[in-house]
Structures are given as structure tokens and as C-alpha cells.
Length: 255
Image: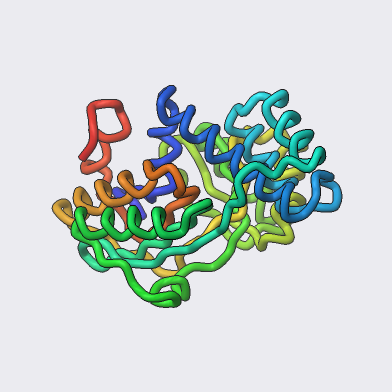
């Protein structure tokens, strides 16, 4: 995919600024809280919680914050009841979009997601309209030089990874089955790899290369969706021309 970047890469690059990090911390904290509420507060017996805690730590959420959440849940204070909802739709140029939300008000969130799709030239679809394009996949993100990432790619396959992406912006995405995620991550760490993120994500089976105008419009849609308070994750199968995102990820503004 030379000359193209994925939305996951753009998210990580843009998430470096303080405003984005504050919003990310809130979303990660909600995921930890929901995972603990639904499966118990002991990460050893709750895989979803274990991954949520690890992802929060990878993003720099302080351990004290995580411990406070777990103590609160263990004490019986669930806070608001959050419901997980998935939305499916398409952006300009036929790019598939999958949105995960955690909400205490289904009607509010549905209205916000639908109006965002509509205002940015997208179309929300029925359940199942695009989810079939994505597979639940373990993803480990590693930073390094070109040579280091080449070695990581080989090590990852030896450790049981299913596939690796192309190095993009000094980072490499390693793909595993969900059950192998922690094993592959641990192996790479033992070998000295700089793991910056690990999570269960939705990986597209096929991708769509976008022209410049469609890429700009889709980036606006994805950003607005990602900014919604109730939205946890936004996935797409779009490939964005690198020259379109250069001004977005270097702090010069939105597309």
C-alpha cells in the first residue's frame, strides 16, 4: 500500500496532542469500567478487562486512575449503565465504516451518529451491511526503524502472528487471532520490540483506495464520528493518499 495510509495510523498520529489524549483517556476509562462491570474486576479471569487495562496503560493512562475504576466497580458502584451499540455505514467513494459506541442513552447516540453520517456525505446502513467486511483481529503496534521493523515482522510470524502490515510512519501493525494477541505481544516485548499498543480491533478483509476529494470528505466524517462522546472506536476499509493526510497529522489542521 505504498503511498497510502490507514485510518488507524492517522488516529495514532493525531492522538499525540493533549486534547486528543484527554478524550482518549476518557474512552479508555469507560472501556475498563464496562469490562470490569460485565466480567469482574480480576484481570486474570476477565480477558476483556485484561486487554482494556493493557491498552489504557499503553496509552499512558496513570495506574492510579485504573485502580480507582476497579475499586469503584468492586465496591458495587457501576456508575451509569453503558450499553454497547454498533453502527454501520458508508462514506464517500464506497468506504465501509464501522462504529462502536458505549452509551447510557441509545436514542441520543443514534441521533448523533446518524446526523454525523448525513452531514458529512455518508450513509448509515442496516445491521450487517458492512460488518461482514471486517474480522475481529488482535493488533500489536510496534515502533522502530525500517531495519528494526523488518526484524519484528519476522519475529512476529515465528511467534504465531497471522500477518503483518507495511511499515507506516515508523510503525508496524502485527495481526494475530484474538486468542494469540497476548502471546505474540509478550514474545515481541521479550525480544526488545517497542510495543506501543495492543488491542482487539476490526480489520477489513478488503480495502478501498480513495481519490483525493473522497479521501478528504471521508476523513472529515471519520474525525467527527471519533469526536462523539459516546463513540469508542471507528473502523474503515479506506486507504488514504499520503499527500492528503500530510497536513492533517502534522498539526496544520483538519482536511
